[in-house]
Length: 177
Image (cartoon, rainbow, N blue to C red; front, side, top):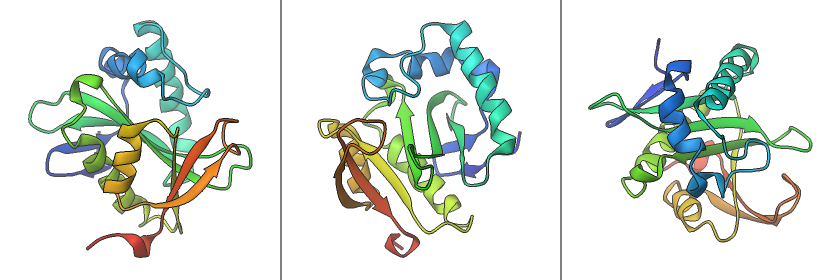
């Protein structure tokens, strides 16, 4: 399996159904699911997680780059510590959303910023003009990450997912050397 992006500490790669237990520690965690959009929600068990991963695997080849979902694997031990993705935002499917989720045991180690930065750098080689991130106003961790990524605050909206969200944008010219 060819990695999408490799950073100093992390590799972004396609999900495998073998990742279901590690993925469940992320997407099955109430601490993570609390912040997820209604599209995904909390995953109940390993079988349900495996089914979600199978769906992501089936969808991936048909997506126009840079869209997709990838596992975040730690280089030193191969552990899956999170996931990143780029998807079209509802309702108009015009804006590309950058998202990241980490196992709560891995919070505070800089993995979200490192993985997102690697994904952003790759995404801007795919002929796109901008990426967006959305976060609930009280999601302090996500808001801190968008600031570390030098994303620009656009405003607050209920356009996406019918939720009150803070919207941030990044364009290729905004990237710090």
